[in-house]
Every structure is written in structure tokens, then in C-alpha cells.
Length: 279
Image (tube, rainbow, N blue to C red; front, side):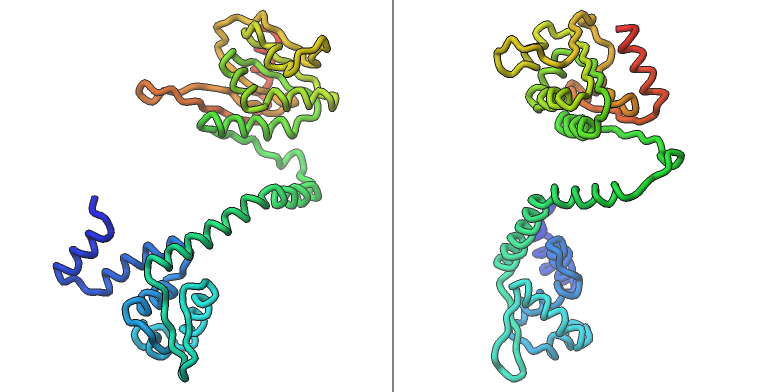
């Protein structure tokens, strides 16, 4: 596949209109949160140098009043500068400098969003807590969760909403994964809130993953390691109202983790019955 530079060189050689070449560059710049008109003005200034707003408007076809607004936006973004001439003239950084500037701005914005995600979630939670949804309006949901990290995150979110009990049937490998993802820590914390946690696993040394310091104190989790080593299914149930099944899929010879989440009560009850009576 040809690079953007090769495509532009090809356009120059074959004599395609400059507007087509500029459009290609404009599409790239818009990925950095510039509007189409901002990119047109920016590219005009890059290729024509110092220009007045009237000249920019005349050559780009953007109305003069709107041109001033777009130029003001580009000035605020730090990629366009003005002179003290009368009338004022405008010029821009080089393409490389523009991209560096816009990338850094976007990186800072994303970092700020990431740092405030907990605060934003608390705001949403507060809004939700003030909205009473009638039980009849609560709909059943289903979700496919791909990848070990995404599954762990989903399990952690489920555990944060636990109010009564948590039921787990997991193999050795999934228990070790839960240990490294600190999900076993979360389970122990739940028991301090009076939430019942029941674990069934064929892992004979399961207690080592639940007792993080050598102690004679009993881990407040009901653990049953008499389960058959050939566990047919792995799952986590929270409050008998939602479940995530821990599955594996194969792409060629590569094994991938996936999960199936639902709050369908009938399905939840089936697997709760399996936990209590079959395995």
C-alpha cells in the first residue's frame, strides 16, 4: 500500500489538481481535531505564507466573517500566528511543527480525561442514584467480553455491586489469574462487609491464593476443593442476579479468553443449581 507521500508525489507527476492533493492532507489533519475549514486555512497559510484574512477568504472560498472565527481558533491552538501589520497578516508553523503541537495537545487532553475518569464516574453514579427505575422496566442484557483483561475488569465491576453473596466455580488457571488481577483481594474485602463468598475449584492449594500472609486465621470464604478436575464450565455469580461465564475460544491454534455476561435470571438459576447440586 502506497504511503501518503507516495500518493501525493504521484499526484504531482500525473498532474492531478492541487485541490485533490490538499484534500488528502486535510483528511489527515482532521484526525487531530481540526474542522474541515480550519485545515483548509492552515494548509493555505502553509503553502502561501503570510496572508491577510481577506486573502485567506478569497482563496479558500470561506466567508470573511467565518474566516476570522476559524483563524481565532487556530491562534488559540497555537498553530497560527499574526503580525502587527495593518491589515494583520497570518502565518503558520511548518507541517511537522503543527502535527507535533496538535498531538501534544491531544495527548494532554486524553491524560486529563484519564485522570478524571473516577470523578466523572462518581458524577454519573450520583445521577443514577437519584433515578428510580421501576423493576418492570429493567431489561435483560447480554454481553460478550473478549480478552483476559476485559474479563477481569468486568468481574471487578460486578463485585463492586455485590450486596448479599458471590458464587464462583473456577479452574486452577482462572483462580491464579484472579489472584494476579487482585480479584481474590476484592473477594476477601467483600466478606468484611458481611457478604457471603463461596468458591468451588479443583485447585488443591486454593487457600494460598486467598491467604496473602501466612497466618492461622481462617480465611472468611467458603472454599470447596473437592470439585472434579474436569470442570466443564467456569463462572462468577453475584447476588443470584447476574453471571459471567468464563470461556475459551480458539483462533487457529491460538487460545483466547472470552466471557459471556447476562442478568437473565433463568440462566443465573441454572448455573446456581449446577454449583449447588451437580459439580
